[in-house]
Image (tube, rainbow over all chains, first blue to last red):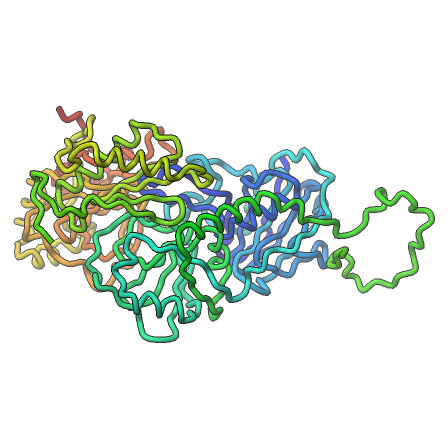
Length: 341
Length: 253
């Protein structure tokens, strides 16, 4: 069995794919990766399908070892990574040779980093997904000693690609649609919500992320007496203390706090990647514009492989190898971090 | 607003259709929990499922609304909207019957003791002695009004008016799987261990979420439940009896 062995690991590291659909009526939220865009980037870098499971790292990485040669890709929040002591580029794919140690440090920017493998992780499927859903009692965070089976990889030679990820790791604006309860907030409150900036609180996880307003708490005409209703990831609840709480992938399926709007799915990776202290703004967009932003993002995420490029030139692909001057350059040991223009 | 009754005389704004996110529609049948609005939400969901509308990916209900998730890449959203509106206008959903194939469950429950430490406190909130409280709950046949919040988690009601007690302001840090908790004339039977503001009055060995079973979610909206008091000794036997925890079910006529 091909496997990735977990030698040590930070907290909140789990296996994730796109989660489970079709179970909302049974109270089970979809779950899956916090930063969906990162799964598409990993797929593009490894030339494989985006719905394969990857390891999601919440701010801190770990030490991993391959039981056999395998391809890996590193995406999402940039973290410092080394293979057997040699730095390797983030947002890139590499070969992890059998027995080599992959060391992934804390995130430099953003929150959620991803480790993908060629073929995807072959961990058990429960209710149609490999995602851990800790709130729902499925799966568990990884611990040292875990052995993660890796599926057969049909394209084991395709690695050494890099991609410039869409910038989503530092304070941004996210776009918001009005929802069924937006009208519970006075026009002046809605205007203030769109005008102010918010600081990402220390309270945040896969269920939701809290943001602190720079001004007064927000109030709704309904107070707290809203009948519990279906909630979806992206919904912005205004909780009892008047602060917005953006529901994320592993949120509950119903909620009774008034919701001022819903963040577009295209922008949820930015919410996921905001780290405590980062600044975020909310911008209302009209419904049709929102739909076209979502459609454009879906299309863009499917076509990321066109934006990848070779990290280094591979000798067997250089036809005039023997005429090249191979020993002229003194390197700083960071060749793999450099990317062709 | 007009005070609605069950004969269909309702303020004209109900039901109300609105988008929820870029790929969802919410059909609300009211803004308070009423039996007729709950029935309407369940019946409308069943009708959408039966109609098999292309473009509708998934449906769900909450206490008084139906949610439709649409295919994200849906090209003809307008067509789906027209179909949903036509279905909605096609009948008085507040007069709809309860779902078919409902079950009656009898679930053994250990009330009070150190396994369910807030019985006395909840009873006092309701103005009852602990014995009266147990009798009141055990004699009420409650209905699953919705499954939601957490996997397989039922909200059951409606309890008699004295049970209109608030949730606690402080959360209980963690209640166990199978805990029966009360607030606002409703019971919740917790499928997962979680923090909660609801008061823990009974403990069951019933698993409302069984991830590895053929039917992971045994309870359905519309099912009815009687919580039958058992002694601590009986309860310890039931704990070893598997995920039903001694519960029995039969189809309702």
